[in-house]
Amino acid sequence: MKDTLRDLSQYRLVQRLGVPRIPVLRRYAPGQPLLDGPALVGAVGKGGLVDDVRALLAEAGVAEAGEEGKVAAAVLDATAARTLDDLAAAREFLTPAVRRLAPSGRLVLLGPVGSADDVEAAAVAQAFEGLVRSAGKEVRAGATANLLVVAPDAGADALASTLRFFLSGRSAFVSGQVVRVGAPVGPVEPGDPAQPLAGRIVVVTGAARGIGEAIADTLHRDGATIVAVDVPAAGDALARVANRTGGTALQLDITAPDAPARLLAHLRERHGRVDVVVHNAGITRDKLLANMDADRWNAVLAVNLRSQLAINQALLADADLLGDSARIVCISSMSGIAGNRGQTNYAASKAGVIGMVRALAPQLAGRGATINAVAPGFIETAMTAKMPLATREAGRRVNSLRQGGLPVDVAEAVGWLAQAATAGVTGQAVRVDGQNMLGA
Ligand code: NAD
Image (cartoon, rainbow, N blue to C red; front, side):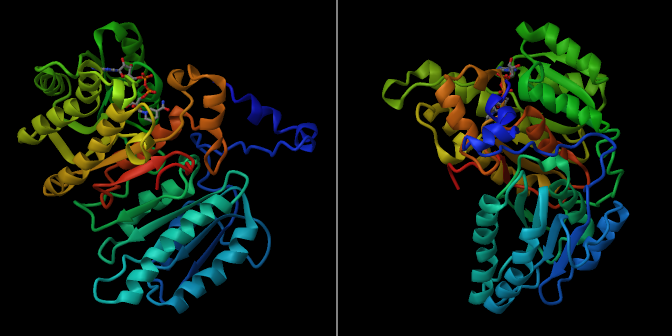
């Protein structure tokens, strides 16, 4: 769906009428450099990761910024911060850094985990969340601000794929997020940043259109072979996606009682294993709770949550189908975090997905696997195009980037979490919503 207001707001004449310019976001395209300009790098105290950050940037061909001029990114290693004086030192770095941030610039803070027996350190660790979430609302022209809380035992290798994601155009619609990077669940193979999913077999449910189709295309662009799953009625579109992504199509209603068994049989027979499962298929059947009937309730819970539980259970029960460094990514929704009028069924299902992810993470860690949720906000799809104009406009503008996201923005986040190299992020929900004002 065209964002006419954003397009018009690029013209001076329209800006003179008082319409603020809505930024055109820098999105990833193959061959694009990690950043379009130099990066400012700093540390609070000893900052144990600052040399690794510099090495990662140098390897990506990013120059370190001098004393003046615009910067494409500012990265502060505040993992050593323990005191309010350390917090003040972070502010000293950030104030001039934010002034120098170029359009679509990236502010990435590496924060401490805090400590149970040091109250000031715990307060300071949490303070960074408030700081970064506020900075996300202040930075302009498509810039973003995110906090990566890095555990002492995470190691620089486990941080690399996440840091790259948040610096790159792949995270165009992700801002104000707090992501915890912990000890990796298995060995971290650095891989090729341009083809981070090379050789991976990836199942995508609901792949025939919308966000699922974008996930299939984007993960295939990054090297994956796609197993595209959707209902038989979407068969033609599904076949086109499978052909395009060098994979196979499976016509399957994921709510059918034999769906997990059929999916696992398809994977075993056609591919021999599965590396990544993306639970994307989802439906809405909106009604106020006062008028909610069992059919609407059950239909939404069946597609959005029950099917994911059943498929995950079957995968875990299977001794050898999940490949090494397996990744499960579940599509949740901002509604599941913030709630939404008329969506008690949908929000329950999407919040349930986040609960499932948290509970399964420790079980999967023992197998070197991770599970995470991606919670999209307002995304420009056929679903949101059908909204009445006023609702659509409101939905688009109530976030820090003042526009709707694209299906590819959700897909890029899925791609980051699907990488074998992203072994230190698990049990989390990451919002792709331009830092929507609703919810946390
Ligand atoms: P969509 O309706 O365009 O596509 C969903 C796909 O899932 C369709 O191809 C559909 O046939 C398939 N599907 C539905 N029921 C199925 C079943 N029982 N078995 C197999 N496939 C089934 O939706 P979308 O906008 O692309 O959304 C994709 C996901 O993102 C959903 O989980 C949705 O809840 C979530 N989401 C979307 C938005 C948004 O703004 N569009 C926001 C937040 C979350």
